[in-house]
Length: 288
Image (cartoon, rainbow, N blue to C red):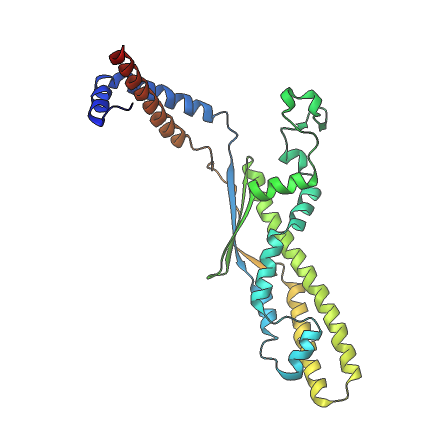
């Protein structure tokens, strides 16, 4: 049975030194335990989506009649919102992460607890204590860890700003990975846009040869001119889809663990447990 609040207050006041001492000891233990946790740093890159892509798309806006129909047949998309969402999807895509992990050979880094650096091989389950490690991690394991625990992408649709962040134990690597992922996304989107433009241009040039109607030929040539400009934008703009506003810097402060938070929680938990001990002890004494 829980005693009334005045009784708890009286017991707390009578045993305040014991409670304070227990709370302090628990706080110290919590802070000490935080040193056993691998620190995590966060690097961020602020991006604008997407200067070159939107300018290229705007060249197709305003087309009507036969021009709009030919644009659709040629696979041209004047919708900048669609292009924007495609760019975000590429930045978040599994294909980008899988290729990044494979090229950088990151599985031993991401799963360093399973990697035997001395012998250059994976630890087997038989050689681990209580089956702590469950064999060789797969590409899927690498993607799941990177996607859920390391990389985050946040979009502000009002401003068009995108923040890509990397949370990792090595501050230099966190900044390096953030920068490289953006570069890879831009390169992939550029190459995709160039390939699309070349296919569209081939189709439009064939249509120009086939058609004898002046209106249709004029629409085709206008589309060809627009698509040539789109291809040019892709060729010359390295920041094709994402322009870097604030590049990633090597973080100096840890994201976690926050030792001040450990200390506060340890103090509160220690105080609560010691007070519960005092109340229970008093209850046992009164019942006895």
